[in-house]
View 1: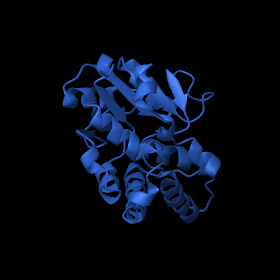
View 2 (view 1 turned 60 degrees about the horizontal axis):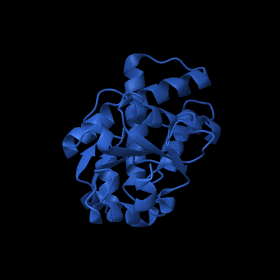
View 3 (view 1 turned 90 degrees about the horizontal axis):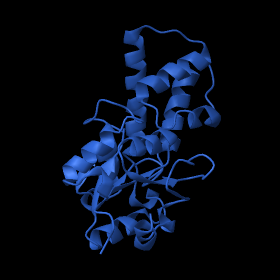
Length: 216
């Protein structure tokens, strides 16, 4: 018997790591605008929406643009990003992610994706994981960004479970906060120093087991 009825997973940094593609696309944009964009800058954009990411990058570069120009730049960046993720393969699934999803489902635990990305379906289709989720809540279905719990609450709703029955898996501080704000348990994927609010922190889903899940 499992203690929790549902697991909700963020996509980027938990199931796959598309940060490198975001980085390459933002860097190309910054370079075209005449300044550089570093990996350090990229780290600061974790869990931040596309629009806000662009605003921060323009601030760092000391560049001012009109709203219409910003929209065009954000679209251009996204086109480059989509072009890259269209070449993704199942080899890019992070260690242990597929196995843990399968273990959850075998134990009768419902699974959902809770991601801010509007390209979640494209990624899941390319890595062949779509069939391992009972519900997919992504950037096309939510209006509020994390730490607002909307994405996770919609996930629980789609799975027909209460928030207290859910465990969220997140790699970003805003995501951990969103899960807590939604009244859910949360497992942080990454550094315990960074994700100190999480109920448990592991370096990846390869460190997770149903036993560890039930001990939360």
